Length: 447
View 1: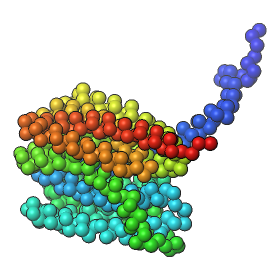
View 2 (view 1 turned 180 degrees about the vertical axis):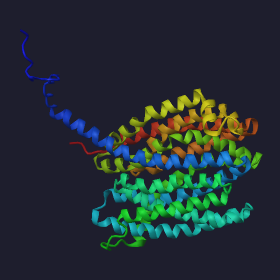
View 3 (view 1 turned 180 degrees about the horizontal axis):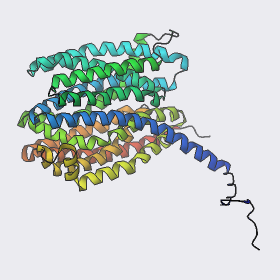
View 4 (view 1 turned 45 degrees about the horizontal axis):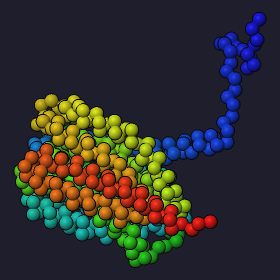
């Protein structure tokens, strides 16, 4: 007669033995992995909502508008994104770093002071938007474009406040209203045959405003006044921390914007629309990339007190966690761009001829992913000037390659220039990372 299992039996068969408890070290590693997954999950969900909404909006406009009009939208959006880099670098980035290390009682004071600084920056920003549209012959877009930019920045301020408090889940409902809501309204306008650049901007402004109200209520900025922060001292601190980030981010965004503007100047807005249509596909990975770039600086900043190497060990798992997804997507895009172009823009779209440019953009995006992870770490350990060096060299490489390549090969030449500059940026970023960690280790006191 066979021996009865130690765990006993029941009518459904033998019971499994109780699992042996994990050793203490494994329990700690498992708990750490679960905590990391939780911290990584919500930022990616939230950024996924934002990026999917932005992607769906740009694709909807590309499908409905003629290439020339869509090119005008791409150029306007590029200008607004460039101005967003100013507010992001001088307000949102310093806020996220300082608030991550601040006492809870100071959070509301930080938030209110940051909003005042944001308001001061918005005045020249919307003046620049209005002047640019007037000179471009689009005076009808001045009011909706300025309204959208202001409400977008206000909503982004409250969103970043929640991020700085690691309350990524709390930001999700507002971002659903803002980013997915704008797509719903634009689709409704398209079905009613009332979609134009102006009506799209009004829809974007309205959904951003509604989201700002919701996220403001959650951010703590409306809490009773407690400790106050001196506006001048905070402005100087934010400038000291964010000025390097500003230069870095402007260089980063202007690499592609200069190509868009250059193509528009040489061949018209319609040609710029084709480059933007290709970039839209690469930007499908933005939920992953931007989500990681939101959390890596804060993670590195929290671990920075233990040294540069410790901060890198804290930030690196996030970059590695996203790498397989990013690389597989970009490789699939490089191998079968025709399929995705047909799915996104339709088989009869003028953008279906973009297979080779999309292949090149996918290869560029692989190098950009790795470089952006390293530069995000630089920001978290207050080494933004190293990220500036990386992007300055990348900008120079882009311009040097683009001048002859765009003149000779047009759109394909612009994509080749991005690829060459991407390789240069990655090699430089990796070298600077190793030097930074080695230098910090050499300067550390020896016991």
